[in-house]
Image 1 (cartoon, helix red, strand yellow):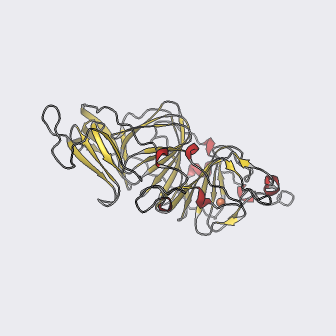
Image 2 (image 1 turned 90 degrees about the vertical axis):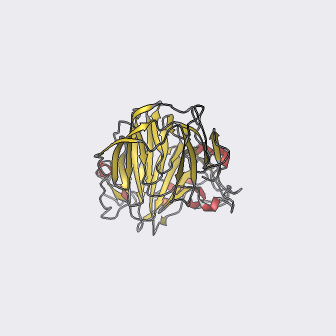
Image 3 (image 1 turned 180 degrees about the horizontal axis):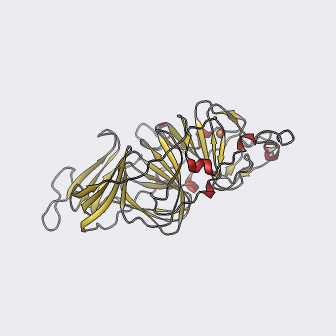
Length: 388
Ligand SMILES: [Fe+2]
């Protein structure tokens, strides 16, 4: 994250004695990334977070993917994906490579155990629903059209107040604010499409002073386990630093518009190893009186592009519905379907909301993805008079 946050009670200096009312010491934890060389936070627990009573196997099925072969642009009618359970069990992986996995989940139940993804950052996009993500650093309340970023290794429970439909991106690394939006000091540049104030860090709650047996499920780069912890993970009295979960709402994104069509990088919201995330928010169209408002045909020659259609009128795409996913692949063309350019001329604005990730390594598809595929999608750019 680009800014410093401190909450709760902290000792005057880091790494010094910090005592409780009964005279015993708090347990300091350095929560760090990239070893000790990237963002981190310092947490002060009532009890050591390390106290482990037992460890057992967690037989978690791994996502299985198949190559996109023959190489095709694909449309997944993802709203038909059935999904129930808590926010981790409900995930249905659809697309993935070694750097990122994209799943759909409909979280309908609270989590009764704690979860820790120690492979990389998770980015949730909430299509609908509300609730909160509970962490040792506090609670992040979420609502419709929020991105929720959960740093690698955060112990959390996601507690939906209403059934929550979301897109889940699981990265192998850090998902962060693009460097192009930050000045030499890390502050967001004036031209960035958002401001520090738009990001919602967690609100620290009173520490949970409970000792007993607490179930934590951990996954880390293909390995997993169920830990039984002696101390409640949310026993933090204070923390500070730069590494924490946060939320950002799509409505707080300030999209850029131009006289003529601007390419997707102006809509970028986050970056990650091998991936760039963009947000297409409602906005006025280009203002030149001869401008073609919708995108031109293009070849994304070295990346796969995944759009998730959230709401509004997706005027450059035929047959797309809310909750659809399109995969436009490196090596093929895509663009407006027949008639879409003429139909768009003169339009002043779009109300579409869509989120995108471009990946620089090929994406593969799961059985569940093939199960909801609109198999004729790749023909949708041909004139209907000639296609049979
Ligand atoms: Fe595209």
